[in-house]
Length: 561
Ligand code: C2O
Ligand code: CU
Image 1 (cartoon, rainbow, N blue to C red):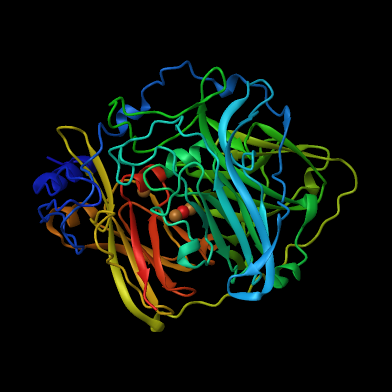
Image 2: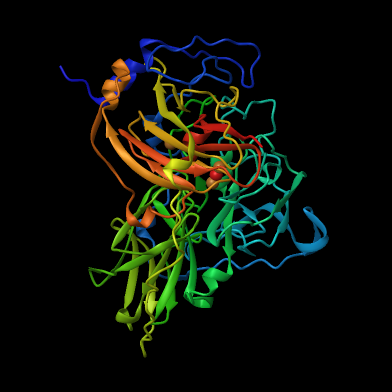
């Protein structure tokens, strides 16, 4: 008899049940340590038990009649491009009070937006009233101060699960903490998930921006509800620019287009729907996939472009959805070049026809619309149409794709002082269908177990024992992907034996640059090499499937100075 992977996971998880319900944050509750599957992490759990019922229930129909995006007219709304925000003034630089740096005061507030011409206004939560929020644009090495102000209502309009770690009934439903994803930032300005504040509260963050030009983005990170806050609309772009990048003469102005991608579900009145498990006291669902795929907050928008080269800066801001992006013109693929990843420019452009973008990953693209003069080009996710480029007719002006971008500096494996093996886990309770997802079998509230020394180099081996791809993100740092190696996960779950299969595969050229989020594939060991530079202090690493992160696929790490 052969067991499928799911049965094996069940069997392995429940050979030795090791969690039980306890209060979040620890009240002395002790959890049995686990014997199988093998876990190098510490035992002793805090926080709640599993959530349930699990994912299958999440697919059930929403209680309000849904909107069917397929029925909407395509290409009737122009693509909105979020405005670059003008600072509200200057303030002394906290690191150098003799100097002044730009200061922004950004309010989170409830607003209404139009996602489509034929859809009534949608209630959303925004930064500054727009979805996405305003773009923050900074120069590398030049600091920025942002006062993030929570001016949201006191009640959440999405289903808060009070049983999740950090979201207990003793806490306000509406809590926020802002993270600039990918920023090298002191810990007190990182938007640590526990550093939340409710309506009327605020936080002043200092972003020194001592990092290369890159496509960053900001979003909510409050523990236990970040998936709902981001779903409600709390996100925006943060672009770091520098002289090196300027020197490349890449397309700019109207030929540089930010594209923030996220999926949603709407009811017939245009209001956001977020599924629940069906259990009133445990509404958490294990992932979210909406049938409405928006670009910069619009459904099926169009953008008029010159028959010239353009730079597209793409962010996957979805809760759970992975995209397979490509461009089409009258049925044929339009070639593109990836010039940058999460943390900036590649060494050389990577030509391709399509590529995968996991939640929180970014891609910086060059596309030449010259050959499509007078026609239209459509951006697709697999076969779903997302955005139409209307290419003007007229003289096409071609600009070559630069042969070289930012010189690559490979982090040498000889400099590694520590290699950590960290498992990605998923547990199910067959009785309740409850679920729990963890990093290295360790719950959020357990003691810090990853404490790299400041400026040291480590390899992290992410051993994925689950059936899902998990986009793993480390705060503060940038890293390089070394390789992905297949192994026999079933055997490992049963006996603890690590049987490798085949040879390790290097990353695809388009993900071979500086990253801050990496796809850890099921049945693979994904190795990344990281220098922990910048600042000492407490940060987090987590899966960027937001539903997973909320159910404890998130852990602190501490850079020790
Ligand atoms: Cu984009 Cu910790 O997140
Ligand atoms: Cu995950």
